[in-house]
Image (cartoon, rainbow, N blue to C red; front, side, top):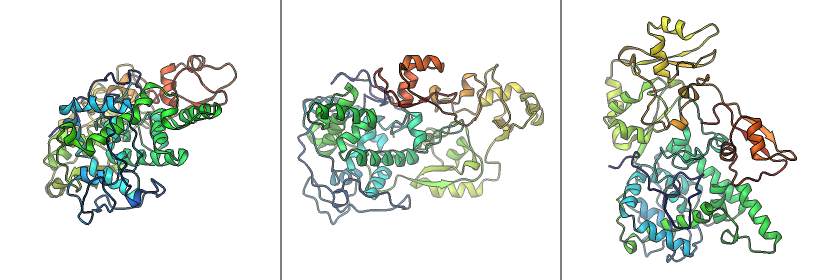
Length: 482
């Protein structure tokens, strides 16, 4: 089974997407449009007026819509690909860029196979949520374009996870990002946040192509591009707008993937079988548990466990967060039986919240360990300091002397600030703002707040160098740069 650690496809030439910043993978997939316009699933006809319904994680829903092929709709599809094909609802485009991307991806069958294999872990859950909301099924394919279905994907603009949220947008959609976890990488939390965002964008524009462009470029940028064309008396549809190369290629890439998924045989592509049933289930924990032990209790490889649970930054998962562990559906019984039979501690790590007057030396003495061990376990450099309210991991027993950071799982750019030798450990996010005044530029604002233009662009989803007077910008704080 291909794991999420597989490397994504390198950037390619079609349409010159070398400036890609918001998507982790300008390398991901999309192109062509021989596909006829498919009648929408009746539940998708309004294309997203419905809101998400509360439902169990595991719920079998037989699609009831029409299909691009002659299919008996009284029979529930046995595989996810067929289910997705039945509910296409975004209008097709047929442009030279679509053709280019279609040809590009079709020429990389091994890459498509590898990415589709990774998608097998997540697609059932994604399409289930999309169906519950009455949204177009093409959206389930968007992580092909964004991340190649790699939950560890990290872009130059620090966009992370399957759906490639930058830190600020992730926080805006309640994706927790702290020393312990980054929910932008959580398959469940990030999927729900992405669909919330896409619903909002569709309601904002009333057009799926513009909504998708906004997901990539920002709704403000797309709105200004529309206003510019309208002021010139020109068409304001997606294909008529002046956009960065990345955004110009974005919808054609998704269209290409849609076309390939719709008719893989035409492109000599063989898709892996993904059953139309839950791949995973969830279990909530109220006690600390080591990541390694959780994988052992489920009797599954550690790397496969991490691929389903990529949001945890540490070797220990905190019970006070009431974390949701994601396990393959066929492992839940084994996990629960082994958990019941387990006699030892679930975690070889204590957590200690620093009180007034605490020092690393006093904490080390309290737990009969060394300052060096505490620094190593918490990713603290020799000059890093801690203060009241910060949380430390204290290794005991077999964990003594081992770092608690999942070093192979947490990209350096999204590790906690303390791991890079600064003074913060587990602190809350403090986001500063600046209202753009007359004469302000990104360069002058960056200089004023001791940050960089690139960080300002990434945090505020800005393309180019212009910034509108009166606009409120978020300013990277100590942990906004992560």
